[in-house]
Length: 375
Ligand SMILES: Cc1cc2nc3c(=O)[nH]c(=O)nc-3n(C[C@H](O)[C@H](O)[C@H](O)COP(=O)(O)OP(=O)(O)OC[C@H]3O[C@@H](n4cnc5c(N)ncnc54)[C@H](O)[C@@H]3O)c2cc1C
Image (cartoon, rainbow, N blue to C red):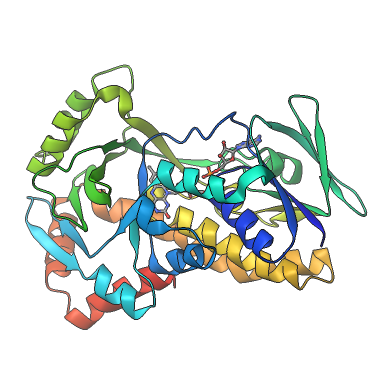
């Protein structure tokens, strides 16, 4: 394997580029935007994926902060769970982090350096006997031994492999934003989640004096033409005080809207010398907080397998068989997470809140361990 063409300079594409470069395999990453566009959002990256980023030399401390405790608040605002994420993560060998996505992407782009090309919108891909070729909107082309589609949820590479694949839209969505000050009620290194009928909200410390917050509706979509704050007030049974503080600190134009969709059971993820990873192969809704972690895990494993590759087809087949069960499980878990955290029935809310607040300590630790290890 001499050269890999990567389409998409998001978290999956950049991780793959760094992992291949570390092994001496040459790469070109093509990103459609003419600079990194990622708005100010944030996400949680669990211990297993942080471990991979650290092995690639990504200075995660500069772009985020370790998560110590993940709090869940139930239907009437009462705290029903405190998950000891920091303690369990360290037992797994690395902290889990809440990060500012733009800072992370900028930092990783800098590490990839001149091998990342901006303003390269891929419009078509082809696979041949010996190579794969990408064509770009600006008339240029690039050729490599293989081409990896890391171009996210609306992947162009996927259209060549599965022209009829369609996202499954979940009738759910919301907004996410970053504030450059801490809401006074948010403690450092904490994430607070609020689960209410038809709606959930959350806020987390992401380091550098910043916090990220979000609101997600179920069976209702965000409408960007109306006041976002009004829609939040109408959707929530009661707006938690810390979320109210975030709302007061946020300019509505900085709130990024999201509509949840996923892509379960796409098979295969490859054709000839083309392969999909990350959201391009297995887009997930965000309610398990795992999509970026899954893209990182894909990239890290793929680089390891390509380093020892003898046959492209065998590597692609083996890669899919190792990664697909985990990726499918994240999609299912995320659908379940949406349903559980926003269910409308009073009875189910009561059972969930009672169950979580009475869960035995060892069981809670097991749940956290499954998340931090990605099992
Ligand atoms: C609201 C929200 C919250 C989330 N929270 C979490 C969380 O807490 N934890 C977590 O692990 N995950 C989370 N996720 C999921 C995570 O963001 C995605 O799963 C992850 O970004 C997927 O990475 P990727 O590299 O596959 O795709 P992307 O990050 O989407 O990157 C794709 C890249 O390809 C580029 N591109 C697209 N088309 C082309 C083209 N034709 N030519 C060239 N370039 C192209 C795009 O510009 C982009 O840079 C969340 C997602 C959302 C929406």
